[in-house]
Length: 99
Image (tube, rainbow, N blue to C red):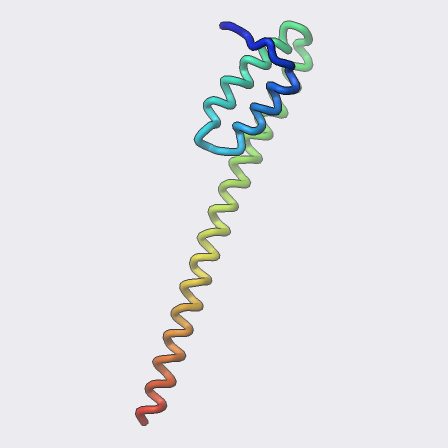
């Protein structure tokens, strides 16, 4: 495996940028594994700590995405409820006018 000659901090920033989108998680993991390989050669304990933090970052990002989707669903439901309520009010007012 060819390792990048980039600064490890720059590589980690790239990994963190890639992890923001679920579609790029595979690419982010590959880049992170490459970074860990470099760090592991210099300091195995630092690599282990970094791996633990990476796993937490991935889980946190997925959790945030899940709750964002839940929020979007709730928002859509609330909007539909308001539309239905408005429609019911209009129907009620028409009914009252016809009486």
